[in-house]
Each structure stands twice: as C-alpha cells, then as structure tokens.
Image (tube, rainbow, N blue to C red; front, side, top):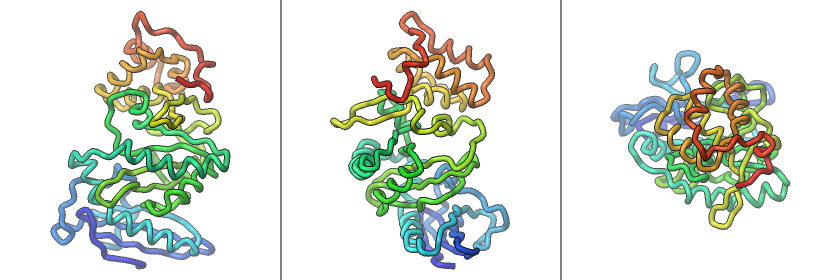
Length: 313
C-alpha cells in the first residue's frame, strides 16, 4: 500500500502499487465505507469510470471499486497527486451525479480552453468537444455531467500537462467503458467543491461497435465537426448527428426530442447519420424510425460532403 485508508464521498480510499519489470501497476481502490466514511455513498461510482475488481478486493469486502494504471515508476508523484485529488473531489462528483448539483459547464470550459488551447495550437494538434457538451454548445437544452474532449496521441499528453494540477487520473493506457483500451486522462477542473469532470482520450486499439463511443472511433482528422463561437473563441464540436444517434440507441426519448428539434432547424446530414448507425450495428428499421423523427417540410437532405471536418455553422 502506498497511501490510505483515506476518506472521501462515503468511501474508504487506498492507493497500491505492484512493480512488474519496467512498469508499475497503480490501483486506486474505493471501498464503501458506511458511517466511518460519512456514508453511505450517494450512489455507485461506475458512471465515473470505476469498476469492480476481477478478483476479491484486498481491502474491505464486496462493495469495492477500483481504477488501474500501468506507468513507469518515475511517474509515481503524478499518480499520487491524482489519487489525492480524486478522494478530495469524490463528494462533489457524487453530488453532481446523484444530488442534483449542476456542474459549472461554461466556467469549466473557459478554464479548459485557456489552458489547453495555446499548448495544442503550438503543436498544431487538432482537438474537439464531443458528447453532451457538444450538443449543449450547439443550442440543445441538455444537461451534461462531464466535458468530453477528443484529440490525437500527442494531444492527449499535452492536455494532461496543461491540466496537471487538476488530474484525478494520470494520462495512461487504460480501459474505459465499454471496455477497450485508450490512452486517456481525467481531471476535475475547478475547486474541490465546485468543478467539473473533464475526460479526453484517443484509442489504442480497434473499438467494438457501441452507443457510447460513436465519434471517438473516428480519427481526429476525419471527424465531421462544426465550429461554434463561445465568448469570442472558435471551438470545434462534433456534429449533432452523433449526439442524436447516441440518445436514440440509448432509448433516451427526452434527449432524442431535444436534439431532433435542433437538427430539424439546421437540416440533418442523413448520410452521416446512416454511417453512424451502421458503425454502431443498428438495423435499417431503426434508421427509418430515426429519419421519421427528423422529417419535416423544412428538412433538406444534406450531402455527406458538407459534413467534412472543415464544415462550419
């Protein structure tokens, strides 16, 4: 054990390490701590990326969660800093997930852009905002609980350096839902009590089809994006067709309706939507159902060429 037991958000936390050759396996443990940890916790940490260990937990009992990272031993100080911030911001993250606390989206985005924008511009590395935040920035009244960023391999490491003081997971090869390997990092940007989770990654292996990673399977330079202006800053965001497809596949009718309303105003790219559905393994009957939600006299059939990475609205 490197650190612990420590308290935070209704959990007892531990940090362990086990060396194997040139790499060290660092593990963040979170055991439901009951009254000893100010608990019970508000809910499961699974939406934060935590999973059950494959074998019995060496700390506590069956109500244990963990995150694993393999890194060189000389990065232990960064891992320990991320572990400490993780346990300190666990309460705020759980309150946002289960307690109705609203994440400060625009405040966080402003801080993130100010920190990573110059670094990635210097590297000439593209990046974009994806997920629910991309939909919000394109005028969809939607709640987002984290800020998802896409970029290249070099961009992932540069973002980690730029947000180093906010890291809750070190930049590392790791496994994210739905179970494939990425090079990624996570941060909680803001104060310990008021901040927002930020996630960024690029894939290390081919991903299986699924509803969660639709835009993340595409290389950054080929991703269909739009440009939006936020407080005078031009930002690349993934197109609304990705958010619509994700909500449709996940059977989230209120979100589907909100995104469809905005897409009808702009004119959806149906060819792009078909490509997304096909990549996610959705059958053609569902395509037709989705098209029906977007149909209307004011909806033109936009060609695929107009949804290239340089397309802007």
